[in-house]
Length: 119
Image (cartoon, rainbow, N blue to C red; front, top):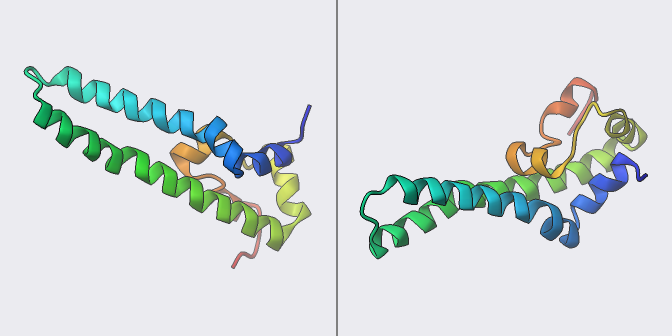
């Protein structure tokens, strides 16, 4: 069994992105596109051409930006607080999983409750 902090470190690598975050982003993109196409009575190529980039810009792009932000925040917290941050990950007080990163941008602001000073 691996530690939660090691899993979080692996998540923010290129391989971790493609194996963990990209499937979550792809599922949400396909799900929303399915809802859009299902709700259109007579779908034309033009409507699909408008809907797909719109869904990409509204759903997938923000998830990717949250992933990038979460990765930089994870590294910053690890450097600034070291073992205190690692202990919070191990205890489960801060959850860094593919779903929490892609949908909520974790570690997000959850660390503020537990770590007193942050830059």
